[in-house]
Amino acid sequence: DAGVTQSPTHLIKTRGQQVTLRCSPKSGHDTVSWYQQALGQGPQFIFQYYEEEERQRGNFPDRFSGHQFPNYSSELNVNALLLGDSALYLCASSSGLAGDHEQFFGPGTRLTVL
Amino acid sequence: AQRVTQPEKLLSVFKGAPVELKCNYSYSGSPELFWYVQYSRQRLQLLLRHISRESIKGFTADLNKGETSFHLKKPFAQEEDSAMYYCALRANNAGNMLTFGGGTRLMVKP
Image 1 (tube, one colour):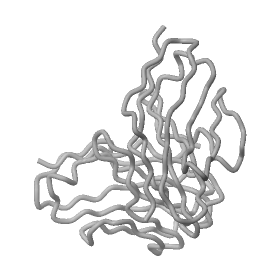
Image 2 (cartoon, chains in turn yellow, blue; image 1 turned 45 degrees about the horizontal axis):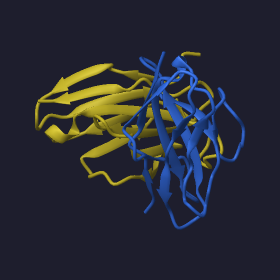
Image 3 (cartoon, chains in turn red, green; image 1 turned 90 degrees about the vertical axis):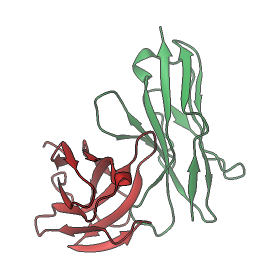
């Protein structure tokens, strides 16, 4: 099991563009959470998906949206990119919504907005 | 809203010295606290959680509700402990949502 995988590894975009990041959860996991980690800061929760629905959302604007597919993989979309969106985007997977089970993190996608 | 504070960005100690990484939180309910670690070129991984009350790699952490702290301690630091350490909090009914602190880089010098 490769664990949580994310693609692409790195991405460079310009302001105003749109980007899609992808995440495949660890085998057996059905819940995916996304975090944004700006340089020198801790990860910040964006949202969480379970059963193909957004279940929880952090303090992020509507420009950030997502999707979960029947195979539990997930996408994070960011529209109208701003310079401040430059960050490492982490995906984490777990089993269920209750929070009792450990979250496993992916390696992240490094997004640079020019 | 909950908040996690790690006051030290960098902590440098010599091998064999004791280590204490500080974590303070603010939350009105009863939280669950975690320590995550990220070694060089590796992904973020769970080190320990307060409800398990176990020692992992010689590290322990005790939840002090009176002082709203969850400091990470190890009596004798090893060079392989050098890494980024993040304290995180999960609020009641928050599912899997974690609130992270800003992280502390631990450097253990030989």
